[in-house]
Length: 340
Image 1: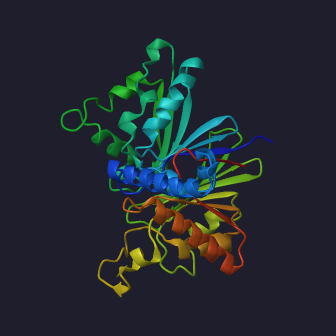
Image 2: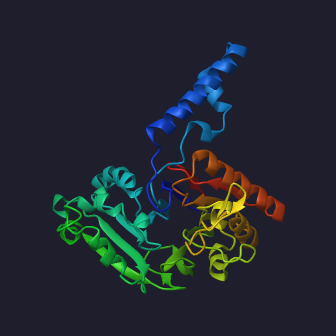
Image 3: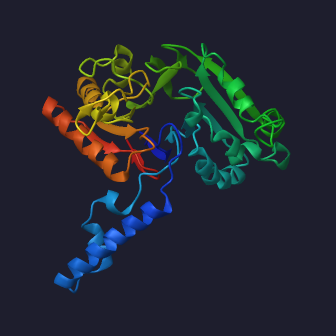
């Protein structure tokens, strides 16, 4: 039985949110002061020993790139969304494409909001000319009822008359294959040998799909950008999509307070109702009801600090435990790799 691996290249929602120099400096200064304090009490303490004793969020960042997840499954390459994280993924794939004289990529597009497609113009494998003997193929899937379909959106963000130096149509001659396919609610995606992919529509302002990927009895679910109307009653589509998943990658952009507009304990008009995103209470209920093994919190808000994301991870884990569930919870971070 072959292993499925899933690697995260972009984990933020809405807009890229790189760590600014001052925030990075604050992390380093905090760690430096704490190390000096502990070393004064234990002179033999080394820096590596000190770091091992600290929580990860204290010395690293979850990342600032927008949605992009890479799945290796049954010898196939599957990309979920093309946010700014796909740029780094492209750099990773270039040596493989050259060595193998080409690479085939299956792209599952949840929807065409900018944070899910904005990285494609900077995806290096799309620019290797097939005349070099490297024949790369990109086969994408997306929804049918969008005001404008996925190809229209990709073309317009690469309009060389106004916003980008390379026109989308040029890639048709560069690549060995560039293909877009429509999906719809409950569609099964065929053509990827040994892998079953099913789509279900999620609750989001624009038509958005979650993907259930099954291979040799293992299941990965990608369900970003969904809003709970009642956190105690998960949407039937989300529940069906997630049922008994080994890994569920799920939107958890807000805290309960952010979603409901609670600031400093006071209810305000600054709610996130109708914005299409979730929070720990709803994620916990879904994980419990669907009997998910591992829950990956995803699509972090651009305003959320590393400390805030860590707290959301802890909150979600506690809520699942309170419900009697057994799911493990981890917050997605760039570079994180999971396998089943």
